[in-house]
Image 1 (tube, rainbow, N blue to C red):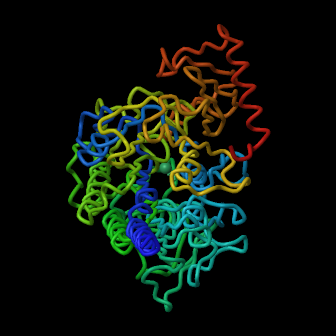
Image 2 (tube, rainbow, N blue to C red; image 1 turned 180 degrees about the vertical axis):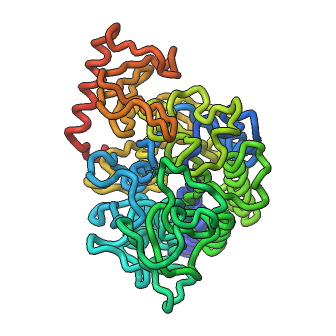
Length: 512
Ligand code: NG6
Ligand code: CA
């Protein structure tokens, strides 16, 4: 009798544990969706104070989740910020991580873990969909007509559908799992960043063909694709050209399809929107709708794409088991190479909100960006946090979340800030290092900017870069707009911060 009931009891245990496995597994491994905007400023969303237009879908994320007031991209341009997000390492530790030309080779080291490879190891199906801008191929250069590698699929993404560089750089084609989409082998692609190739018209020679005029001071007048001239020359590949007004819908569709394919298992999607980077040419659904020109229209398009992604998760009943993170790669810029009326129509809107500077700037406007986290049941709705967090921390924090142990050499600058990410720790990082063409460090209320002899003002993009030959110290608690340089009044604080920065430059920590 005792034996029989023991057998019963044991089989009950086995059966009930089998029945529970999938659920338990799912709960500890939520899907992860990172929605990464391009050049979207701290003040560009209505949930961050934008008055001129509404961004209801992104606002909804904030309403259902946690809004960060002190979150940072590592850098004030695209390539280095993305490098940090994917490698968990500060980009200034490696040469060649500045804004990448369209024919750059892959800049992500192949011998270390990436946020995608580690999550893949943890059982996730991983994807990058959208703007890449981290180089492709090896040092010998890229043949765009063959399998292109190494690229995202070689560093941990199971699926990739990308625009290779920024939208203003050739080649203007999608690359899916290493292959140019819709390429006609009889019309092969050649790309050159030094001189013209082929006979395709350029913005310089054929300005009458353009629907968007480049700023004569900033280049962008080379090969014309979709009636917009770009940086760099390309020939061939005509059947593979993207249409700028379809990009947002195309990459959103691809993301929804990836989510549908993987609805039954944990997935990680890095959705890298082309909005609101130049050339801004959103769909006709949005053009002319913001009253702020194409830049405002592109914000509407970005918000719409976010709405579609959220709706897709809802209809697949994945919302409760999906952690969504929304952010931007660097601060805002109005004129970044095309005369699209962003400057003329901005009115009283402040793209960086209360912050000084923007894209390319070491002031807060360069790297402090919108950052929203939503995870129903785990992150309290409608909350705001002042915890300091850097995007470089997503690597360690997300791996911690899914229980994946990292190797010593992986993600050396990434801190496990999971508690701050989920709104349970109000402090976050001890200090944050920021990068433009120079470096700065922010610790508590203080920010120290390293002296830098480069230009303090770029007249073309109208950027206050924050570079000065003297050191600068700001009290962000009382002077968020970085107007009063206190370096002479508080030399000890400046010295302390400068010493911490020097020390961090000198070593890469091992895993905590
Ligand atoms: C700059 C480009 C700018 C933009 C930026 C990269 C010029 C004069 N300006 O060099 O148009 O492409 O690089 O932006 O070429 S980012 O957001 O991808 O970093
Ligand atoms: Ca950018």
